[in-house]
Every structure is written in C-alpha cells, then in structure tokens.
Image 1: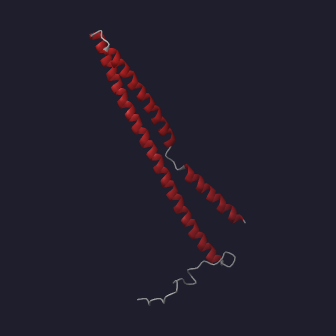
Image 2: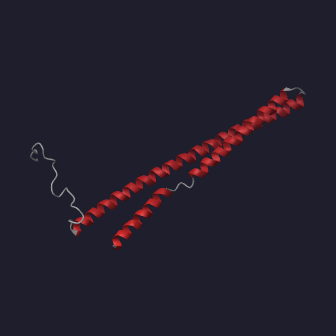
Image 3: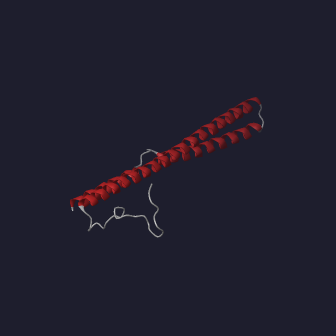
Length: 148
C-alpha cells in the first residue's frame, strides 16, 4: 500500500519529467524518439482508418443511388409499356399521359445514375491516400533529422 501524498504535490517525480533535448542523455533521447514514433504510428493509423471509413460511406451512397436509378428506370419502362398498350388498345389521350410519365421517370433515373457515378468515383479506390502521404512526409522528416 502506498502512503498518501500531502496536499499541494503533483505526484510527478524527476523520472516523469522529460529533460530538454540539449540537456538529455542519449538514452533519454532514444526513449523519447521511440515514444514519439509510436505515437506517430498510432495517429497515422487512426487517420488511415477514418479516411477508409469516409470513402466506404461514399461508395455505399453511390451504390444506393445506382439502385434507386435502377428502380426508377424499371418503373419508367413499365409506364412506357403501359403507354404502348394504351396507344394500341384505345386511341385516346390517356396513352399520351402515360408516355409523358414514362419519359419523366427515365429522366429522373438518368439524373440518379449520374449522381451515383460521381459518388462512386469520389469514393474509389478505398485507399487512405492522405494518410499514406502523411506517413511518407513523416519518414522523410525523420530521415532528414537523422542525417544531421
């Protein structure tokens, strides 16, 4: 069991406080370097995970829009078929209405397909390009500092 600390003390020991780089020993500097590299790798991994998650969401939205475009196109074809049947069965203005509805539905499908295509292109490939660039920059900085 440890003894309680008196009020007013922070609990930090001389081992807890990192010395200034110009006053640190080689062992302390290597220890700090190891800790900083570990923290850097963890941070870059978190960044890569967030980037992949964001791109996967874009791919999901794009795929959903493509699905919606397919469904609307199906209804457009159904309306066009209905228009053709009505035009052949009865020579009435009802077929014209069905034809207009079919064309409008197909136009909506086209817009949804273009939007889906744009989202899929923005989300692919699902590679964390920003995180990779950050890691390359970090490696170059460490190599440059090590050469001094």
